[in-house]
Length: 314
Image (cartoon, rainbow, N blue to C red; front, side, top):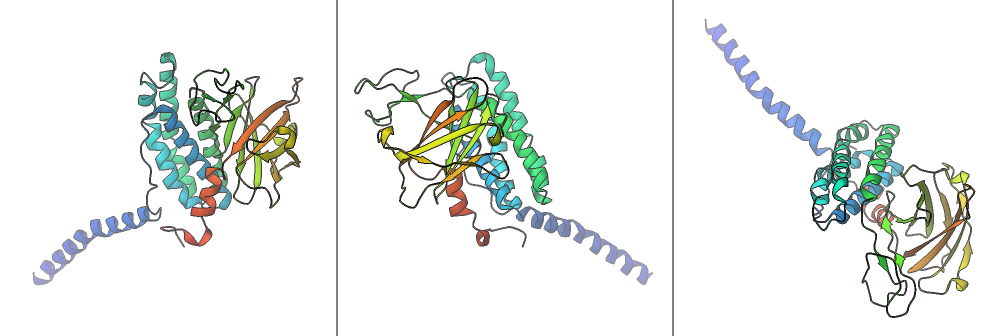
C-alpha cells in the first residue's frame, strides 16, 4: 500500500510539472524573435501605407542579409496596420474613394493574413519561401498605394514644405509643381511615369549606391535587362545642365539597375533617370531628390549589423 501511494504521488508531481515545462519551452521559443518592433499606429491612411512600405523595405533588406529570424518583428507591424487600414480608409479625409474602401479593407486583411506564412518561412531559414511571401505582400501593398492621394510641391520649395492636392504652378516663382514622391517597397522614392503605366523606385545607400527598380502600374516588377536607361546626378536644386552622367548597369539578378556615385558626391542630391521601356513610346523621365540615404538602407547600416542582433538564435 505504501509503495502504491508513493507511486501515485510521484505521477501527480510529474504531471504538475509538465504545464510549467511546456510553458517555459514555449516562452523560450517566443523569445527567439527578440523584442517586438517599436512603432506608433498611424492615424491617417497615407501614413499607414507609408509605414507598411517602410516595413516591407526592411524585410527585403533582411532577406538579402540572410537575417530571416528578424523578419518576424517587421511582419508583425504590417499585420497590425493591415488589420486597421480599412478603418483609416473609411475616414472622410482619407482621400480614398468610398467605392474603393472595401477593396482597401480586403487588401489590408489579406496583407495581415500573410504574417503566419512569412513568419514560418523565416523561422525555418527558408529564404526562397520568405521571398515568395514578401513578393505577394508587395503586390497587395500596391493596391493600397494606388489610393494614396497625390500631392504636389514647388521644386524650389518657395513655400517650404507646403503641398497642393492638384498639379499647377508655384504662386511665387511660377514653376510647374512636381509630384511629391511616395515610398516604394524597397524603401526608396517612388515616382509614377507620365503615361500612368509604369513606376520607378530609386534608393540611395549610405555609401552612394543608387539602385533603380522598375514595375508596371499593377506593381509587377519589370526585369531591368528589358529596358534601356540613363542617369544623371547633381546637387539638389541645381540646374539640370550642371548634372553629370552616372553609369548604371543591370544587377546580376536582373531585378534592378545600379550605379555608384563617387566620393565627392554628397547629399542632398538629385538623380534624373530616363527610361526607355521599349513599348513603342518615347523614353520617360523621372526625378528623385535625396536629402540623405533612403530609410531602408539607413536602417540596414544602423540597425542590422551582423554582430548586433538581439534575441536571435546563435
